[in-house]
Image 1 (cartoon, helix red, strand yellow):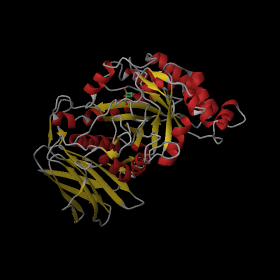
Image 2 (cartoon, protein in one colour; image 1 turned 90 degrees about the horizontal axis):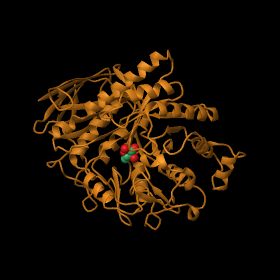
Image 3 (cartoon, protein in one colour; image 1 turned 45 degrees about the vertical axis):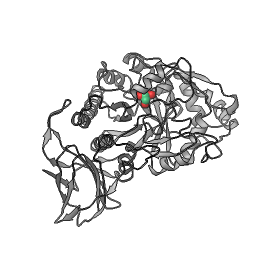
Image 4 (cartoon, protein in one colour; image 1 turned 90 degrees about the vertical axis):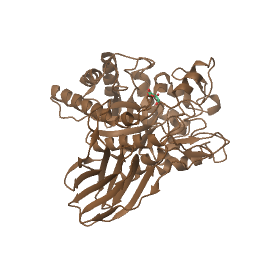
Length: 502
Ligand code: AHR
């Protein structure tokens, strides 16, 4: 079978915002405790931060890490995580029915970000708390010394303000499960007043208002319209979340799910434009897709832990999805969608980063290792930068539950003008057929293939594990070549690949 693609130097979608390769860390399960933080671990630094995890995180070149939640943030008191560690209170975490020792708080997280080569995107509790705590938190993090919160920060060991630019105004406030869940009207007003107040402190902050928790919420997309009617002039981004699952064990339907993602983003883009027009505004609001990933493998185990748990365990094994090869294809398709929607998606966070629905896993006292999905995320983050190309794609498709005529080949392309490189990321969704990729390179000059990475596997259910960390890994591809301005390559059935030319 054939996939015909045309890339033209002048046909671009947008400059990709590097922040689409961001991630998320929540005080949930073992993300923090025995994830990034484990004093006593053989690799722990003086702050108790695991350096084996740090190395795997650094390699990903993650622009921003969203923190500290998630559902956790909606009943979190940020003040519990400051001051001497041994005097911090242990609290009950109402979101995940666990105990929170508060050994890691804002100081520890900000130091971790510095070491990991990333920046913080902080979420504010607008569930159990409100505007006043929000402004106090922002002043504590960014305010000058000589004022109450700045001086307290200094007393706690950090004199210079951290200057965090990105702030999330709550988390999933449309969700009935959320502590302090609100109607769109209630939340819109609170978010706007909070945004106004934070801007009175620093008008250049980037503020992110909550959109829908997923595209199946009853309130979607009216939620976004109402919330933006309240906040359009005071926020920069609206947040969307989506998790992907293959509960029915139907690979073709599963791998078509990014058609739903595409539609979700397109719908909210339309809502943004509607509100912009209603307000006769010159301002642009973009999308922060700040929670996305595959999440379903651990559902039964989580139910057993949460239902069988009458106590409040500290750092239990919650949401520890073990990802298979099939999920590599899914994550490849999701990342392709963000590249193709880079005109409106300016931030995206894989959820999450360590142990909890994560590309990186750890064993307490033991090793840290890469899950299968680490790799498509890694290659996109390293090479999927520059301009997103508007590719013209002709290839056969199939009808799936969420959409008809889903193309068997899902592909995105990026052009790094400075480096003079083109990177193509392709997923073949076909279970049995190879595709001959014939990709016309127009306006780029002479080129040769400089890298070709392939992920295929005879078993869609193959996984990496602590004891077999290399069952699902990329291999160097062969046979891809550029001749007469055309990139030609064979895309095997059920495969992910990255082909780079210069
Ligand atoms: O990432 C896990 C959870 O998923 C987050 O806490 C919440 O925001 C979402 O529902």
